[in-house]
Image (tube, rainbow, N blue to C red; front, top):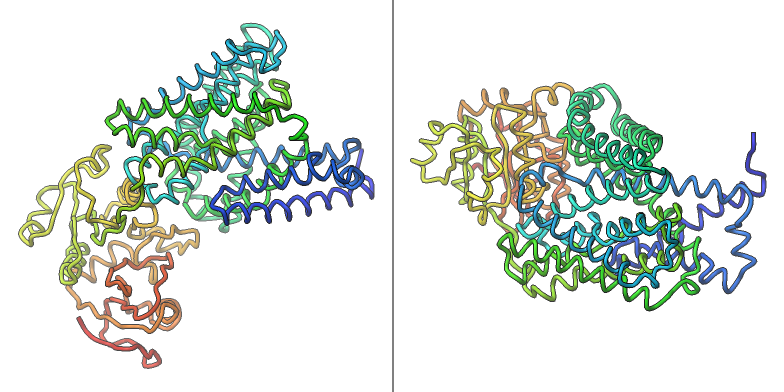
Length: 626
């Protein structure tokens, strides 16, 4: 069996250490300038590659990154693995429920925003064939690729840009995100067919490739997704966290990659679709997604993006007319297409332009697409360089151009102190009394009208109707409400409710009551937005306690660390139920497993079941009954 020699093994470890170190340094520098880390990682590769290091010190470059032997093969295998995992986390970010929620508006915007740049890409080749230097036998495949490359967006970059602007959960931001999800989903299907065309000849092979791609995608997001909903709770319950769920997700992505590669579709498509199916399950927690995301983006992503600069001399293959043409048609096609789709959906022309510039960010997805096309022989090195430059330019300018067309974007106060409560029962009525005394705006929602009678008599806002109706958010005035508590007796409905409202007000501002099963299992993989985690209180226990209408006590702490100590170490969880805490701005926050930070003078509100159980070792600023 062929193995790496002693020298090749040393070089391989040197390659990994240098690529990770330099990639991380350049990535952090890029972040300091509020740019995506991928920009810095690609620049790191250009510095380590033939463009700079190879030009100034060919000996060192050939020693570290030889072009012959087993070392390049091993590095290529590792970067291929990195691409598979990058597509897995990209799939995890696709929220099908969000697409379904926005319905026709998102689909319409995405279709127009994808079709127009696709057509412009095809027509650019027809009108300027000499720019692209494509062999005649590959012209049809190349046109499909160029159209796809100009139509696709980069969901991770777009999400980061919207978060920085403070509009991620706004109507405008949700439209951009949902459209980007559809773009990515459709784009990878088309690109997989394009690569399949490179591998097969004849009409039968083309039809097989297309049908296989669509069948696999359809199976995974329907039957496969439902099967995963049954399997994931068992893994969470019986396998240690996070190792069990992490191994399962990566194993499944490798199986999907192997299957799609076997049927003539590129392996990345299988990993992407598996990620979509996994990420859309309510049992695949946000904490798990964050663990996988951190694992991939901090180890495998730098290796892949640094390796891009190692393959090509960006100076020798930089053709200014080609680069300018690619950048122009990329901007023109996406901004006009997506902007027109948004305008026809009722947005103003400024908002429509912001949608176009938001979806114009190409980032990592464009670079992965170009890399695979280069490896497959669809494009040459000058066009690859042009596509990489275009991806960097569009990613770096997206947020700036959105602010340029909408100067007040993200400047409005996004904080609302009100709380939406789902479920009219003994628990929520108890909480409403407390919140009303503290002048917190409340909106109580419930499926059944008769449950809301007393709430209306108490002059609290209420809404009766199907809480999971896709159009509910359009009928509710959410301007005063910044948090959502799902506290009905139906655990499944609570899960679905926080997912729906999470899209509108932010995933970190929606909470649900812990289920009885979770309370019994004490599973450490629980979501961070579960209420009253100190004792794992579930609905039936709290109902018995609150139906007796106990008093709410409060205790003030000097700082946040004192409150954490009280919550996790000092207080007796058998007798004290922590409810809310109030920060220095007099804003009341629900208690959950997610640590929130405050400076000083924190007030904890709690229910003392046996009365005066606070240990004497606690030395708060003040102990008082409300």
